[in-house]
Image (cartoon, rainbow, N blue to C red; front, side, top):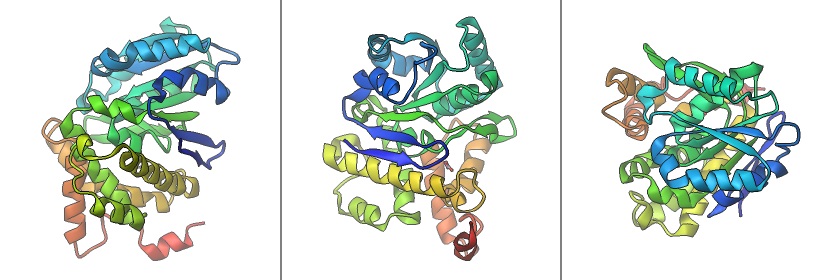
Length: 300
Ligand code: GLY
């Protein structure tokens, strides 16, 4: 099954394994986790936990971990200081040590918040990203951007904190609400526009992209792999967004604005980014494209 290395310092792996959630604990041991502290805190939301909580706990326990869990409400509007405080309270309550891992089991909101909790509790614990949404698989679980929203804007509070492992099981997408799957395709198409012309060709060749049931498992695997490779390549060249990484923000300047002014209630992130990409594509100015190509070429 595809494994992609993200060549940051230190490097880490993205593994895409259909049915692999049951092997999460073993994969964490292989990634060097659990040697000092066996305690782990899984952070998720009630909807995801309903489907995948048992499987996750069993996998961790079988590998020798002592897992605890915290469930936070789902939705971008809960990606805030109050949810973060709950992560700190749980870390304190369960006596996490600096070598204890946190695990984000969920979509982008859970991944961002758990990642930021891990970045800041005890000045930094390992975080394992287990994305359960298409959006998190192709974007937010990879690359170490973590954070919460400020009432005045999205992701204004945060830190770069690379995961120790990104563990994807595409089969969990079967329980993703159809709107979430469909609209996350905007981020997939984004990679085809900004980075991987072969991916764009693959997307054009497929009869339908707007539902998981229209994609053969090998096509989905190829899409996930190509997106992960694209993101890994960009992040390895520009981890802290000094230049090149801004290319990943294509469509996001307007997209984030749309989400913020509609209080994260009306549009999914993918819908907002799709609108942002259309607007950026129509603009005569490259103000939503990150640095110009000439500047990218000069980025050390
Ligand atoms: N989501 C854009 C980035 O990770 O840089």
